[in-house]
Image 1: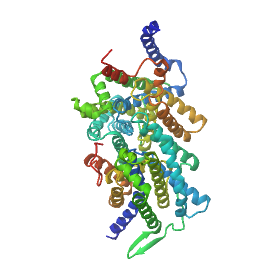
Image 2: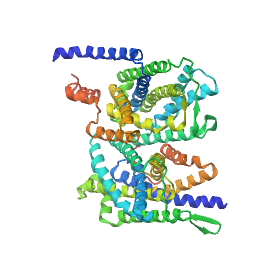
Image 3: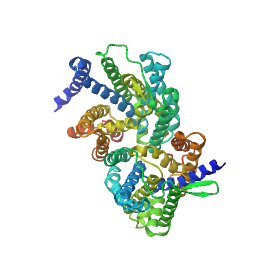
Image 4: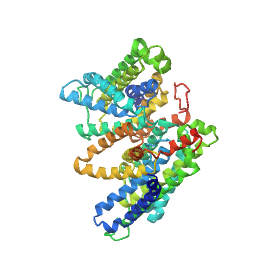
Length: 290
Length: 332
């Protein structure tokens, strides 16, 4: 019983991190209708930047994430301006293909800079845990969950209580009307790419603190983030949070009952199941056929 | 100019005939085994890219998961030859059969999805396939398994594989040429342009997509089986490597998606380039250079290298535009 409770808690804590990893993808899709397939590799970039800052500058990894945020914001803006804007002028498949190219570039660049070996971020919290009754909760995971919750709170605040957030929500509801009412859609898209990529950076930093990583790990994370986003309902951030918690728990229970080697498959299975049975996801609006 | 244009179709045919002749006599001219190996790789990739191009280029359904059929083809051959003592030819044909069954099962479900969701579903299935195979102990788990050696003498080694791969690549190419001229080809083009309208005109889009998907799975199954027997060793990480899917996408986009010549140009260029890059800059940059080329090509040359020829000549328009022109302008 304790083991089950333990793995449930572990699942919820992971789910929080998954929410941060995936929310940017959902935001980009909801506002710009671009499916950012390079999002997972940007999470990997976040891992390595956090590692680099914490190692070379001696920063606490959680503080290093704070520095990663503006770096990846700028990177997201560049991705939008340099790749998405230009390739979206071409045939329908061009955006998908050019972002696939970006995946290959970043995976190769990360491997060339930091090698393709497994890496881990060491922090002073490593291996510590808090005991509650008979349960032991890993301190890094708990802190990662806290940062994840804080980031999601900030994202909600930004979208709901700022002028730019209002413009983003307006654009996601109706691009043309928003444009008529004076919203600078191009600027909104740029900000959305920046914010979403920064969120990928936070997600990457948190994952890097919890697990070891290697450059090609993003293929596996693609399953996680896409199942979160599709299961939650495309473009719905609340849905993504719910789905992230559900998938975190599902993975954790899978590795407890069936075996850890099957945990990566569960996200893909949920993704496929959702696509087949309820393509609009948990909270997504029924829209055009996908 | 008129006279030249009249000559050109013949020139094209002569060029194709010469290329075929060169392919047939190549093993006699080249003693170096390494070059035969490169040629086999080129044929493998031509087969994969031509097949990918059928749903990807003609119908607009981009698959990230074609490596599934390639990998399953390899494993079918491994299982049949090792566990059931089946001969190589039948094993490789069975690999094609397995790919067809998988494509039928998976295609009839996933082809209801459109655009990027189809692409992600294919990726998901390929990754699940790799996980499942890697966790079956009877198949060697992550270690994989060795295949029996070919019965022919070692000096002869690569030549049968060379002709088998060349034959498969030629069959895949010819199939695409025929499909392109068939009703199936035109209907696929129609549903690429606008699936709802194609459906409204009475085309059974699901049926056509599934047929296209099955054909596009058959050849990767065969070539995956052949490749497994050629290399003599299979394991989940290598035979289900996402790199196959990535390479195929890059080759198709570079050569020209939805064309017949594009896959040939793309596969040949990238296999040779990949060899040169492994020597000169090291293989870790290869992927990044591929990615860079993919980004640049999709932005600056969205219809691939093959469209350069048309742009330069400025006369021959692609089939799709010809079709549009005939419907819009009311024929010639």
